[in-house]
Image 1: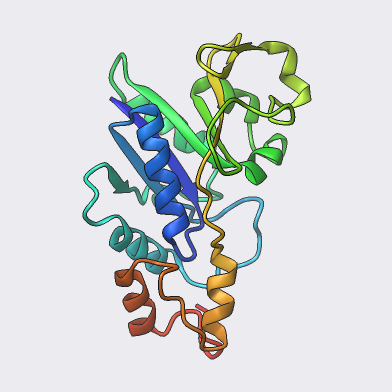
Image 2: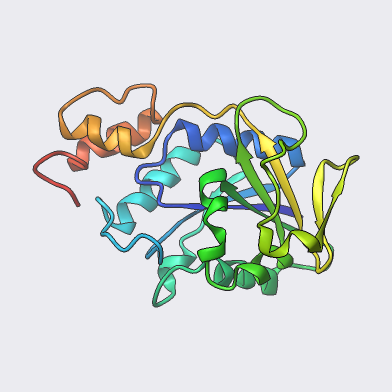
Length: 219
């Protein structure tokens, strides 16, 4: 079993998330991608515009029809901040011998990874996939391991990845990054503008039915 862990606020989930996940699934031949809404992000102390329940429901609506996409609410079942290393460790404890775990993140998040809890251990315990600029091909010169651990990695030309001495490969992959952001979607909704073709229709209907992201209701 090859699984990808795709975490984020998903506030709301949009077509950019879905397209990136599908391309990662195809590139790495993943059996499953788990969308993991963060319950309490440690580096984002401000309150989310909507609560976890709404974000999880929207994620489930968004992945309907794709048998490889699953939503996990496990971060909401833990107390305290939603640390990625804790989530990864849970999946590692549950998986069978021979299973492989890929942790998926955007390049902006990766640039900030040295602020994450136990980040060195995170990078050694699973493969890291960093989504970068549009197109496909090998990593750019600027796409590399953090300087603090760069000496522990060597580049594999055949696999187009950085192999870690302590385990865990680091992949930079250029995807069709649709220019869609959750912030822009929330701003559009706050002033009554359309979000058609930015989110799945089922998600748009849920947002409208529950009055989410309007100027009068921010949660």
